[in-house]
Image (tube, rainbow, N blue to C red):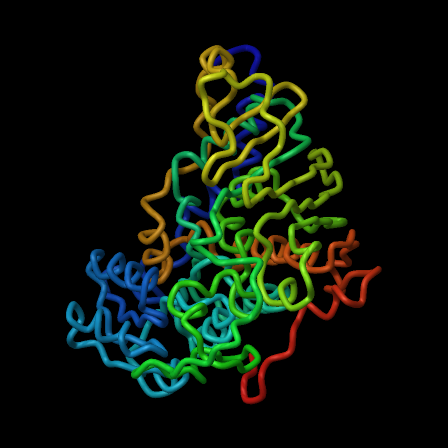
Length: 445
């Protein structure tokens, strides 16, 4: 190992000990109360089976688990998947499915964001294991509650930020712990996702076309305020609408920021601030959709042996200055990206820059266990193995909560000081109203 490595192997091993222990030592290797033994096959239900949800159920089926139920407010999505899973029972209401089909062991949640929490919490309270797509929830309050319910029910959980199982994410942590960039002071991340993927910066449509046959629009709207159906919401385009989605930050933030939350053990931010293109928009636009572009910043005070860290999110084509260390022929901040800045260097994701420094430093000590795969992690956890890498209790709920605080800063355009213990901002009542928006009548957590 290069002598310039700042940390000894003992210190690095200590930093990764909790993760390593959780991954290596199963809780119930042979099963036990509340846990299936590893030899059994899971009966899995999918809720939200169009698009991403269809891919999720196929990923689980490929691992030889049983798909026993398909649920979607749009029967067209169910019919599309029923050809591959003809024995699965069909539902348009997840509540009926969970209340009546007793053989379900685990649930895949891949609906629009505004339904994640109500489905996940109901399933967990009924003893079902849950895999839920990112950003796990629609609101900050929901994220906190989902983590608490997961802890109380002790079911196996996993959020769908698939990169958390990758080699790249482990290398990011190991390079940081090995002192490759010195003391980390800043993290920059972002996405250049274009509006045609998730339309943003637009007003609510005035047209009221008929609801397509087979779509239960009331069920699709769920706990959100009711509005007329329009194809600009469903299918696919719901992500940019505040009532249903969480914008580019919610969509991609849990992917890009996950490894630094783990590596730096980021807790709660002291403050959050943001600016966006919506600040120049009339209320009928800004209150409806996420902005076309935004910059969001969280400040995490020093904690333990970690220095204070500022995390900044960029989207809609905005990006920080190109680092001087980066070779001229290499792209910077294209697609979905992350840069880590320390007092002794910089990394683009898991690559030190420039390449000459990466070659000089070499590979960091391998101290984290490698993943068998995102889906295998969760399935093993469902059968009594160790917790999955993005389980709600240890990682996903907190990550989602902090990411979603950024959306509140975007919507208010003001610097917000966060009191995590009391789950409120100490300086802004308008922002506090967005921590736990009210549900439509008839819907509760």
